Amino acid sequence: MLALLVLCLGQPPAPAAPRPAGLAPDLAPPVHVTANGKPVDVERSGHAAPFVGDFYGDGKPALLVGQFDGGKLRVYRNLGTATEPKFGDFEWFRASGAPGTIEPG
Image (cartoon, rainbow, N blue to C red; front, side):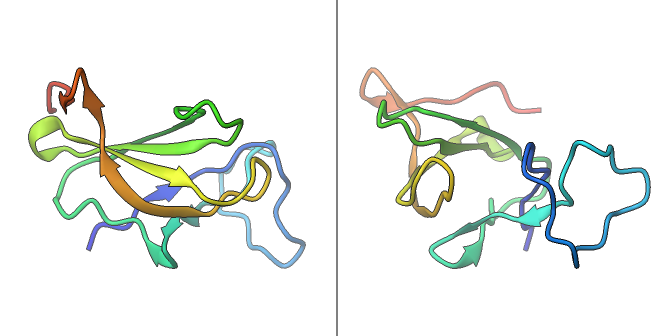
């Protein structure tokens, strides 16, 4: 299982959180990003390319994850708030009604 790890910007880590060696002081330690209570898993080997943005125009950051295999993109809607995101199930990114992909690799 390839669980997605993301470096969170902004908020300082909890006092008990260990800081990996070499981590920039303005970054929090990596965390497992979860959707429906489970680590995000892109189901293929390779590199995921996570990005957050307000894709739905609701003022809350959603999570977009590129999948190495086939260049497919998953979008996880934020069911929480802008400051405390909680991601649900993913849906495939679509453009003009068709699955949107990017050049893999």
